[in-house]
Length: 336
Ligand code: NAD
Image (cartoon, rainbow, N blue to C red; front, side, top):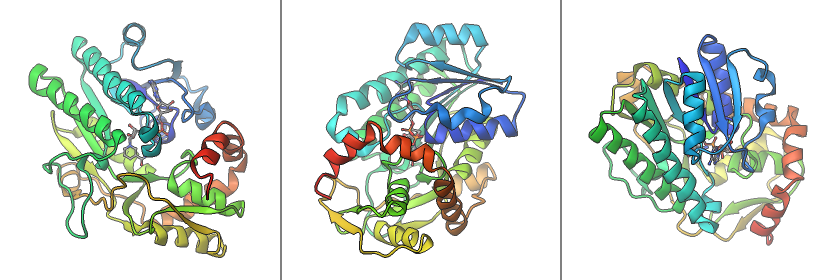
């Protein structure tokens, strides 16, 4: 396969590239990434010299660049990870999210259609389904009811992807995964934020009452699921991906503190995020039964491995936290 991976310098994309170059070393991987604040080539240092890996710095919205890459590398499939991915930032800058997440997706879909690609995979999120009360879980047939500009942009991209299957017969799949955690996650997201702040004995900001529920999956389990979809996904199908591990945010924070042997006194409840979804939970029986996938990591194992990774890679995250992120953090959590 000659695979175009977009957004491969981000958290999940870089984990996926590491995984693919080990699992399928003969596939050619082209990584197109704009290197926004969230993209980091240090995530890919160890594979940069691999003969089947190539990095291209550029924007998924740049149509002529996409055409050039397809011609040069004989691309036959795309997995679109590229996105603006942080809900808080989407509240400040919805327009950027529409541009990258919606327009960028449409440009990639057009290219995939024009060249009759073997496969187009849209990496999406359970946030497109909106929020749940205390019971139940979303299936792939649940209506879309996104609440944040981020989720709305991802839902829009999903609908466009579906339309390219229905109208043009493009062989697409959409994956909707729950919250990921693991190595190389930018420290604006809850788990790395709490781990790194706790290591540095800083305040630990928790939104609202801390009772929001998220469903957590270790990133390498997500990568294996995408590989299964790439090779065995049925044309036009949507697959939920998750590890059935729901946790209240505050319990997650306390669990991390326990693992790090840190006290709870730095926890600070801060003003809730506007429109903050209360609970996400997804039903993952379809991918488990149709594609014979199941997560290999239980939460204990995954979170321990993640904490160890952040303890061993302080240079990686300190560079980020002492750079441009510092201003964002101070502005955002100024009162924390
Ligand atoms: P991330 O923010 O860590 O990485 C996004 C990457 O996309 C960065 O490398 C960035 O430079 C790149 N990018 C942004 N705009 C671009 C553009 N216009 N052209 C090319 N590259 C661009 O995000 P992530 O957490 O790795 O998420 C990857 C994908 O998975 C996203 O589509 C996200 O919606 C989805 N997803 C994430 C989660 C999660 O828990 N993190 C869960 C489900 C789905």
